[in-house]
Length: 158
Ligand code: SME
Image (cartoon, rainbow, N blue to C red; front, side, top):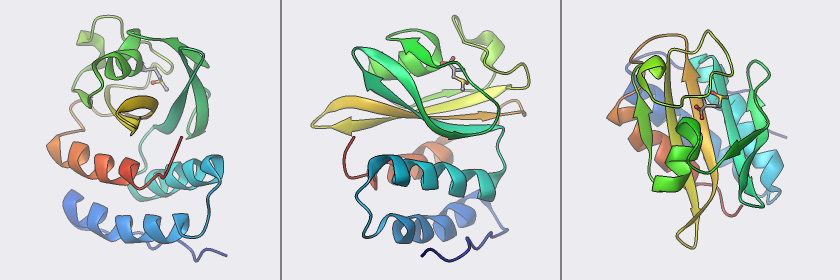
């Protein structure tokens, strides 16, 4: 049984550095992917209180909504569509400081102002993406990219 998450204050980097060992602890000894993705989203939401944190999983050449925390969201995204589909197609992390300036952005919530999407790789193939939305413009930077990539890499397989 997992302990309560210890929420920390401090710089964003310090917050990630305190959170990552706790996420490792949550994943330890559990090999169910959905359970692990669910706990990662909950831990990130609790620590950072972003608008939306969740995974989309590649299924039959589409992204399909997986475990998430936040408002209801669109269930399917095609390759290349929106920020999520673009990150999948380009197989790289995308930081969008202002979603209204991203051509083709899919607005699941009108409250979302900025976004970061981090792909998960299985044998160099993207099999899922982590999507995070913020109510603030320009809320994500290279620090988020670095640490969210670390967190996504803790997942063993999708
Ligand atoms: N905004 C995303 C869609 C997913 S939601 O934000 C949860 C996109 O443009 O791909």
